[in-house]
Image (cartoon, rainbow, N blue to C red; front, top):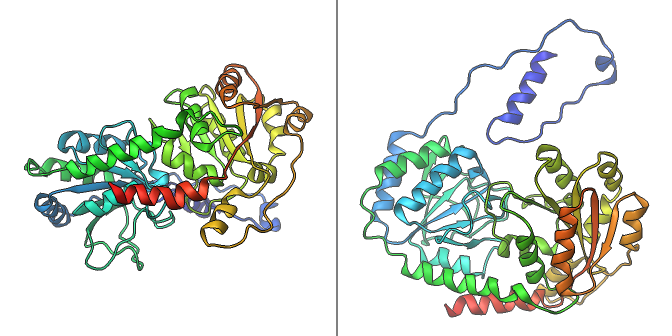
Length: 413
């Protein structure tokens, strides 16, 4: 029925946009019809109400050290533009969630870091040091970028929809409506911000930047994740796309890889489905056939959907797939270690990935030294076809760095 199709398209495109499943029983699918599609109506998103804007502006005027948190819902063209204008005009620093990466260029001098972890990182010290949080495009489907506590820092929620309240998220002011317009209205009304002082927040930024830069040239092999992330960033131009599968490397990419543009780091901070890396890279190639695209997968996630190599080769795609091989489920191992459990049941074997790629008609490569990775990646990106890189990775220090050292260093700032 045309109305069902029209409704499916409306739901898919409306905030928040996403996939819609439309199921047809076999007998209905077999029927003939002369009905025509219903054309779309003229529809505009509602704008935030004047009093809500005023309340937000008053709070911001009274603040001394506010901070922006940019989430998944802010990843829209106009929103990205007005957020950058607000940051440039007022100097307000910003943090990104995993799915807010690249909405504003993360090379910006007011970028404080990414909330790849939920607690204990430098960004969480920054959020604690702020006296007001403007949470833009918050999506409860993401792992929380920060936890609210009673009597703690107040939050202004700016979003298309009202806040879904839970034990760690209960904003004091809600600005509900088109996000881009709301940020523009707030920016226009905010004039007196000379008393804002970001000394503490920018000191935390410096400590975080120093920590991120540290492992960028780590010579050890198998590769350390910090070195790998830094080399992928060196190899890709600003518009190049990294499609991440789900595993330990996702935390490292979210934390350490600076996104220059929206939708150039495709990662799933919601269901975190393993096996998504290769298919999402292929979809990105279909949308942007001229951009360099890299899928970053763990050996576990890659093997869940590796048969898609055949599709990529058949469609003559230009893609590079990096398989980070630790011969185990590294993310679960990290969590198991974090919880104090014995290392149990997470080891497995793998095929020879070079031969495996060649069996599908793709090009197979293997990394055999830390310094060999970047030139190999650059060669793959410069050569047409589907390339698979077998890259041994060393996750042995994940627990120490992410669970212990980061917390200690963040506390010391």
